Image (cartoon, rainbow, N blue to C red; front, side, top):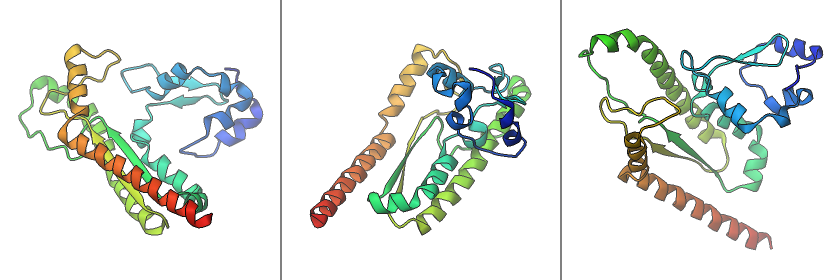
Length: 217
């Protein structure tokens, strides 16, 4: 990508928590960025991968998107708010499908930690608390959005089962056992029920649209 022209520097002087990459870096060839490069930049997790800089002036330093909005909920609700009139006029409702790498209701581990765990736990605790804090915010956003949105809003959650200490590693390369555990989790009873609910919601949506079209006709 080419460097961002200096006339955009004023934009970067303001505090924004979200920017539209393609619009901000249009003149820098944003549409020519490789998909793999975007994925890599999005996964810049502290201490695991080197930091990524965008071609702006001053440079924008990227970190893992999960630190701000791990499941994309905040972005989703902002989008719903921005598109509210269109959504209410042209759809029969909104269904948010959330895929989590850990259960939302994680139980505490207690105090029985090994020495190595105690040394490495501060970073893990910070990251874990980020997620829990985001969950609280997301629950509030979901509840408040359901109040003002004039069409149904539903939330379906698919979760990765990671019992005890047998967590799937945060790595680009997973072992055969880890891949098997992920596959088994996808087809767990709880996730199967969630997928069935998703299908039911989508089918109900199709029926509502059919009725609406017949009424308009």
